[in-house]
Length: 211
Ligand SMILES: [Zn+2]
Image 1 (tube, protein in one colour):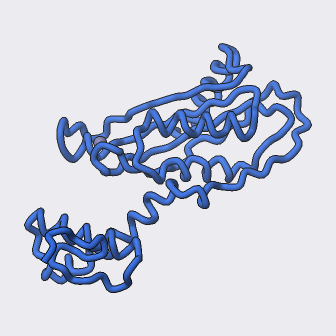
Image 2 (tube, helix red, strand yellow; image 1 turned 180 degrees about the horizontal axis):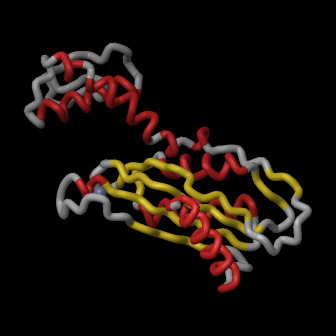
């Protein structure tokens, strides 16, 4: 018998229930992983874990699929283009690329409209789309800013993320509660005036949140 595993068999040679299903393939590999970790898969609480993990990773990594890209409909904007549009405190959850452990927190997005604005809920959808991948916080911040810069062509765009990383809190250096802050700014009018306008708004939003 060949030692090479058929891609749709798991290590014990059991065929997967539905051949060709990505979900079953992942569940089979998770089963291998849990067995390698010496976990008892006959424990009723663990028996369904490979299937549950497979389904949950499908959702947590859905941002890797182009078909899940949010549709960014824009609307004409009559304003002067001098005042930024801000959405603060958008909750997000992601997985760190190094440990596949969660990091999560809030995103603040601001932009100077240049003739067009986008529905506010869409900003949250863009953050979620890029968060549902194995990520580095810095890269997530940059990707959201670059995406909005490209799709919306605003005068300027700011993205700030504040997050807690469970890979730092549950293991390793074990620093519970530490916040990691990252920012990205883009666009032809992303000057000192724009940055200080955004900072002032964020400080006010923070105060409201704290009071
Ligand atoms: Zn990590």
